[in-house]
Amino acid sequence: MSEHEGGVRRIAYLPGGERIVTCSEDKTVRIWDVETGEQEGTTMEHEGWISGLAVTRDGKRILSGGYDKRISVWDVETHELIEEWEDETGGIMCIAVSPDDQLAASGGERGEIVMREIQESGRIRYSIKAGGGVPSLCFSPNGEKLACAAGYYYGQPGVIHVYDVESGELVLGPIKAHENMGLLCHLVTRLFSASNDYTIQCWNSETAEPIEQQWIGHTDYVVTLSLSPDGKRLTSTLLDKTVRFWDAHSGNPIEQPL
Image (cartoon, rainbow, N blue to C red; front, side, top):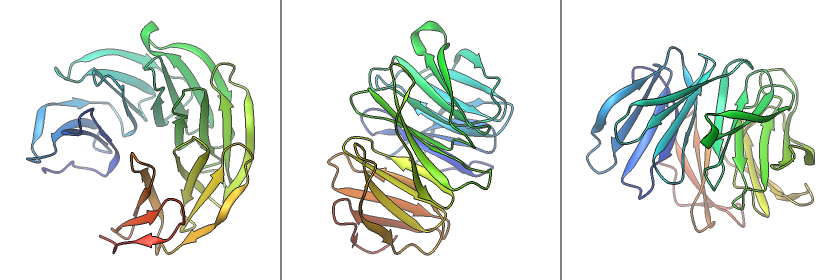
């Protein structure tokens, strides 16, 4: 694949798995053909770094946001800008879309989560003061809960909060997860978190209790987590330029790092 001119902050698959979307510190969003590695169509541009990226489940829209303090909504096929949603909460660190494509949640560097109505031009339903920066968000598969990592950038111990999507009320947490919280993924009965303390932790998302001990074996900061569709394998990427695979139930490493 051709290169972005800055660090790639997020990657998302489009439905079908044949194309991926990336956003970067070079202020661009791009779509790539997975088979050929070629960029598809024109580049979508922001006025600042882009660190938040999400794709609607129907594969029709891309949502991107960053340090130009707005969320841009793009047409996947034409790459044209559909609309922009202004954001007064500071730089946007992450974006998540609900499973039914009705809601978009964004997390900001000032510690605020904003919940918006996608079909109503980004109308704000409510906002939540999570505390510290919010670098990661995820909806539960049934769309009823939203988990966030909070406390980032402010020297606070990292915590996980779980909110009721309908009301915006805190239903679980704060869970003290890592010394400097960074990432989380997959909110069903289990929730996985990781950070630059080199560890991964699995949690019971109903009781907030850790499941087993922390997974140790990384040699550098963990920067991304991804769970396989069947829920059996967790993948982590590190700043030491490796990709590692874990048994999602036992926490044991599987295969060799790439």
